[in-house]
Image 1 (cartoon, helix red, strand yellow):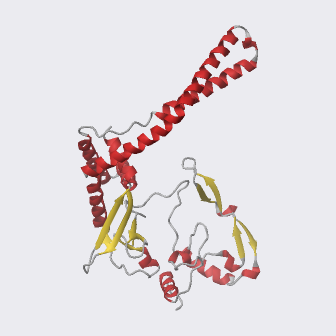
Image 2 (cartoon, one colour; image 1 turned 135 degrees about the horizontal axis):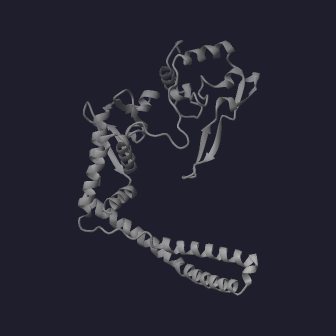
Image 3 (cartoon, helix red, strand yellow; image 1 turned 180 degrees about the vertical axis):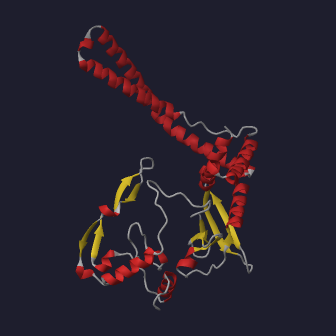
Length: 336
């Protein structure tokens, strides 16, 4: 490999020679550069200069989703230990690489907690129809296969502009959203699922109602006892508080059984739904808070976008599949 070669050329050469990457898959540019915040990647790996770094991240549970996430700790909290027997480069070589990176500062800011917000409407949603790689931004206004760019192992050389890509995806999505027969089918399936869950829930309603009746009687007896003078004993008041809390919780469980009523496709619901979809599209164009909300809503409706090379000499074929459950919910809320 020629000295001074770019990471992309290095990756291309390694993949063409069949050299396996550390994970056993194909090489990509991230394997070379890694993450500046975590000091990963071959060029940033402190282990190669004889220093083992640990304690760079801390795991935590997201307060809402309860998913386990990793938070990058400040560099001053990292711990390290010298392992000179693992050194393969000199301090001078390490400093030279650091100096090169210093001339190209990483301006990205990691937002925590939670996953990063998508930079664009269709970020991370598109997949290449040839290799399954991510269909992503290749330049200021062009989208293409990242495997083709980073690994040079995909034959899909087609690209598409942001405006055309978004317009075609939104067009297909709106066609699906505004298909009356599809919405009717979705609602029927939704209702069938709700009825099944209600039938299952009704099986536990009877014991809950018996428990609520028993707790109500217990509370009445405790109140009578307190009025007769038993209130002098703290344990009676504690038992009363406990019984009231259990009764409130039981009643909430009973109420929850009937919270989800089957969705009915009432007269005019489809027309209101059409208006809602049109407003969603307009909100996306408006930008600001409305645009951000519209972006989130639209992304939630898309399951996958497959982008394949057209049989013609130019252009791509785009296939959009929606998330049925989210489309059902959109139809439900638009008809409220």
